Image 1 (cartoon, rainbow over the protein chains, first blue to last red):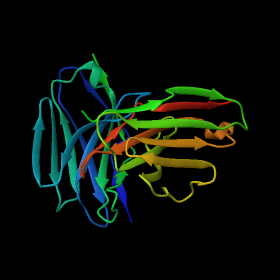
Image 2 (image 1 turned 45 degrees about the horizontal axis):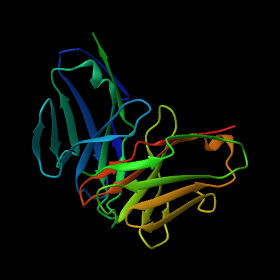
Image 3 (image 1 turned 180 degrees about the vertical axis):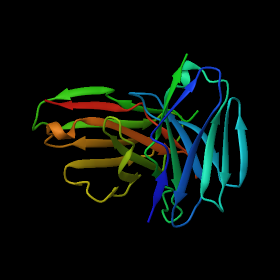
Length: 112
Length: 114
């Protein structure tokens, strides 16, 4: 079966660091994505990992361990505008259209 | 680059009527477009995958006769919700696959059926 797990909700303080975890059990793997979605808006692309290791992009970093079926999104120097849902998605290698399998999302609440 | 637009951004319609939602890739050609539905506080639910010039592939449980998808060109896909009912009220989002790695999303269409 296909399963992606993320915490439902997390709370962090402005200026701090937060790590959002994602574990996946899928029949095959061909890349993992992180998207940010503000309430009432469509998701926006944050990062893509296909090889093990850390990908850094400004305040956001994403890590992947394929052997553990695990990824995390690290947000540094948190700002109030980072309050959003963060979606983890795995690309289904069986699908010729490169369809994504989505997690339920983690709602991140930033407090002053 | 990789901008996807949707029209309308919101629509209110009466029960029993049909509503068409357009999804356009503005600065690229999209071979594949995806249609999602999202209910409040829930994650994205893939409804169908649309390839230019061919019939859409619907996910299990999605009625193809109710949600008509047309992908007539490499820059335009449309979703028509036929005989809409209040339970169809949702946030409908399209995305376009730019290349193998990323999907870019349109801004979404909020449908309210009264």
